[in-house]
Image 1 (cartoon, rainbow, N blue to C red):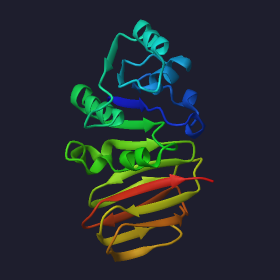
Image 2 (image 1 turned 120 degrees about the horizontal axis):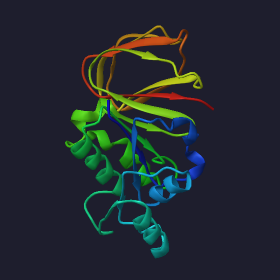
Image 3 (image 1 turned 60 degrees about the vertical axis):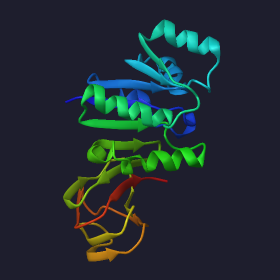
Image 4 (image 1 turned 180 degrees about the horizontal axis):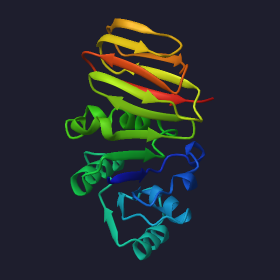
Length: 215
């Protein structure tokens, strides 16, 4: 199974412990300053891309010396560097999982764009494969269906974020349960908790993001 990890250039203070995530079967992509960060961690990405407007010319030369595939785009374009990286990941590697690191914190407009990537027609078919992870949160996306999720050992809280109107949302095996609730507008059903290692949920229509988090 191909797994892609994309390092974006968000604030380093928001990153989880990357050293604990250095799995042999993960392919890394560096985005703008995120590529420099990977090299600093001793990780050599298969490619680096972006407009590289957040790094110096010396740092860009360093990237070109260390990474075989460096793709530079104009600063003025119709897609963010993160969008370009996710597009390359799905078009060129056919992954089962794409995880974004460094995609939270910093500019709010960038954060919202990253959280809403899955609404774009190019990414919507793959939304269940996309995750965003930082030092306190794991964000996953779900289309209508029936699901069972497993508690992450270091997380306490569980949120169901209705990104659209959602029909017949049911939450089972957790502290606060619901039965076939209709949510008329985007809403975060926050601060729920697992009561065992697994929890179940289902819904009929809409788009839901599940966030496991800790303080």
